[in-house]
Length: 320
Image (cartoon, rainbow, N blue to C red; front, top):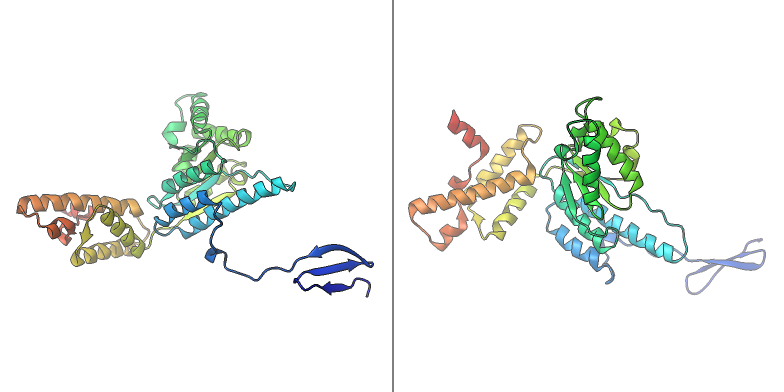
């Protein structure tokens, strides 16, 4: 045999070419589920962000993506230390999903993580929308956009409903804002991170407005609508933080209301934001009820009852 293979006691395989040992190839270790392994102690930054992410309901795809981004950046630094090639991939992102699905919250977490990893010098979040970028005359838009990018240097520029920049057609100044963003994404791509957010279908259409847009967003994260159980969990967490709780009838009423909205077709309410508004309104309604009843038993102070839940549809019926 021209190229004998010899097995050593330690599980390594020696490949002998032309009678001379050239290299040692180690066998792959047994497969283990990555999600079940404990992170080494040096990854404190990721552990801290993980704790904050675990407080968020759902968003499993997003949580996995953030861990992968962290791992990629960390391992690239180790490759650089060993003299291996590393690629400084742009970290601009696109968040696709309906309102109230946690996009802004996740953007803040990413800023904190990247600041801890020295990827961003500050890690702050600058939130913007069309009115913050688009000016009223030729040249005004480019200047407004440049000023906004300057504020975001060292952190994240988060543009919500970004597709609105392309809604006015060819003569609209929104196109000027897009062109300015694309230029600075290239010129200063490692000085700040741009996150564009909006509805899934509209964001796909938005990418077609400039030939350079699609390739500049290597990281796309989908934020699906919350299920009914997840929305109920969000409500429970909000109430627990404020030391309130739903009665059984109130819980049943809220769940039935969410089921009704789901059955209406495409979700028209703002997910977590909708639940938060219901909870805050119910707390005020409960306070008014207790004030009128002049009863302040501990259990009464704690419990949100079915009559305290007031939905937007109820307000519409009152006007009829």
